[in-house]
Length: 321
Image (cartoon, rainbow, N blue to C red; front, top):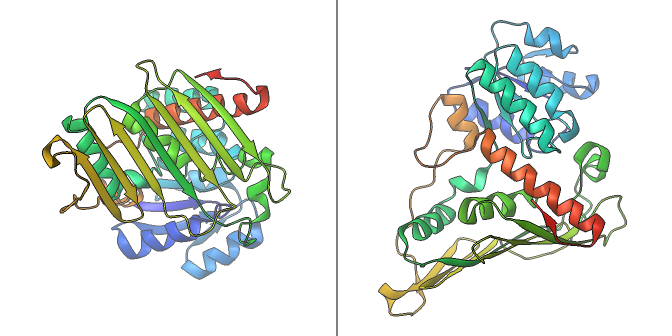
């Protein structure tokens, strides 16, 4: 697949370019960027064509797919144009800030008979694949509670670009960005919540939240908690799942569980499933992992939950999804 990258606005764009070149069968052939200086510099670095006009790039019949790593606010326009130009699309999460825009993207995909791939990268990691297997096997019983904490010190260390704090461009702060990982993992384990209640705070004085928690309520009585932020140090990703017959804890690379088979004793998982190729690698190489999805429906559900989380922060109340 010949691949173009649409904007180096996102901090992951450099990583994706490197992955395409070094770890996939895809070929990076073009770059468009709304910032000509930035786009020209990366085009020179990768020895590819720079386009100042996005529509002109999409008219290039030699380009098969487009990686969207622009400001989140630009996703709908760039993604819709790429779909209508017959390009395959890979998008950084979240798919769009509003569900309405996600539905426009879904309609365009249906008209073209295509899907897109979203950067739900943690669904490829061995610990989370193991957790999903344990849940699906019934070993933990009926799931009653799940909690994911995913944080870093980006604001404390002042290592995030200034535009990551723009509500207009991002749609929010830590929850919209880093908090997408807990949200889609909770969706994967627990499904669609019926309501969300949020508390977001601002520690470092930016326009958007840098410290955030959302509590998700499910129709069957289960509770999910999504915790995220840019103001915590030394916290490995932590995922807890509790059920009626067992429990599981992921902390960094450590995976422990207790269930009926262990006599209720906590044990280390002896063998984890092999990690999957990243969503980007699967997209670029035209492969698809069985039983794990990264498509438009996942993107729609993620945005629905995010919208409810931000409405709750504004209202101070529990909001329906």
